[in-house]
Length: 192
Image 1 (spheres, rainbow, N blue to C red):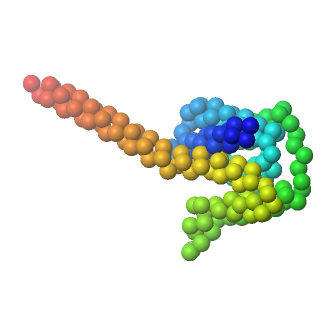
Image 2: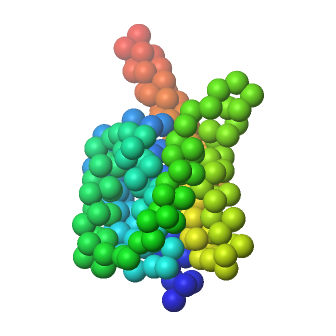
Image 3: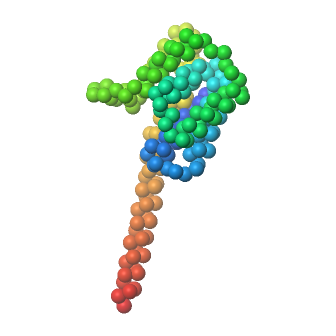
């Protein structure tokens, strides 16, 4: 069962990054990002409602809300979907101390560091460090859950985005060549 939950966390990470990429980098208005947000909301809602590592996802989502990072309509759809799905799957029993512990570190990940500390913004290490520290208590599931999500999120960012951008650039270049070729043939034809 844990493998299934980790796969869902991985897929949720990929889907969240796709919506980030469509919103932030591509400035897309395409409706598909809302479908993807609903999908990641369902996966995260399931994770919150049905897994042993739900509290780390609750902390991460609450930190996003408090830091006002749920800042696009697509992510609002994903957030609302995750809340509704979590309520549908199950309302987990949460240890408030563990929730606060993870929230503190999740909020640190949302800070915008400057100067020589700017690199921290890229890696957002605090929640992962907090989950790693929980290994000392025998709770490996927190670490595995957040790492599975991050591998999906970062994997899409570092692997798929460059490939997609390269393909898009290639298509754009072909389109430009075709337009220029068409204009040239039209111009040459009108000179005769």
